[in-house]
Image (cartoon, rainbow, N blue to C red; front, top):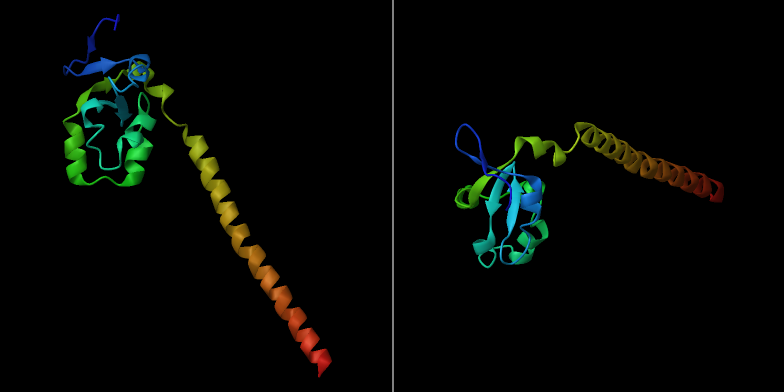
Length: 139
């Protein structure tokens, strides 16, 4: 990989995002989880969720997918044996999601939740009133 190997003061090997993105084949499959680089090439056939799950994340940030599944402590320990380094600190901003996006999504979700509750309640109230008026006039 033509670039000079870079290590942290603690001896952790750093990889640039471009290096990680290039590792997305059957010969070499790397993923990022919490800024750590995992070589999952030999684990593709053994992954309980199927190799396609890992292949979809190959060369990219799999943190959200990994956490969404809710991996067990055993799975996390097994994964720790596949760590080969960390994402270079200079590249970490390239994969970070802005906090504002999460707040906007939360605000939209909250608004959507209220509208999903209020509209059906109003419709139910109107139908109930119309039914009572109709049945009262019939008597």
